[in-house]
Image 1 (cartoon, rainbow, N blue to C red):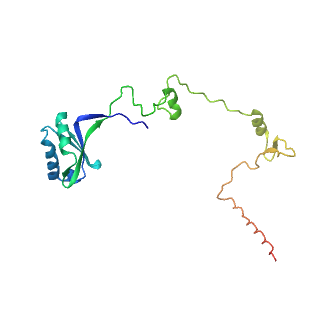
Image 2: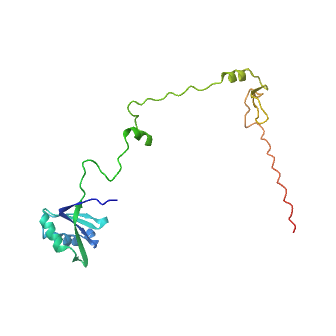
Image 3: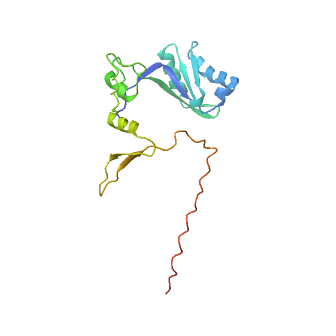
Length: 195
């Protein structure tokens, strides 16, 4: 990936702080801030505890440069203090070139449905169901026990037959006797192999 040119903010420094007490102890924090207040009275600090960094904002670039030259790699509480000029990412007016542009709105509804349909969208009416009136007529003419052959069987295909049940009323499943389940016979053991 190509590197991106960054502009330096000459009036701001970023300090890589190794001593965690700068973020937890008020006395250590005041000593740390005192190092930079000697160069500029209007200096402000932004503490980034999870990154162990401090951004130091000076009122002018000369004070920031002087502080960087004199304090870079000096000892603070037994550890080297590293100072860098803050880098500012330039904003682009024509959008961010590092990322892909979103798809055209005409294609977005294919990725995920929209909350409301696009302009000019019309719902498609469902096709009418196919009803075989010949089959309905033949079934209605059947009485209990009669059969109606829908498809005649051949040597390679079975026939399809509709048969109307004998009873008109439905039986109560609680009162009907449970069918007896016949246990499947266990296959015989293979014959013993003799050498």
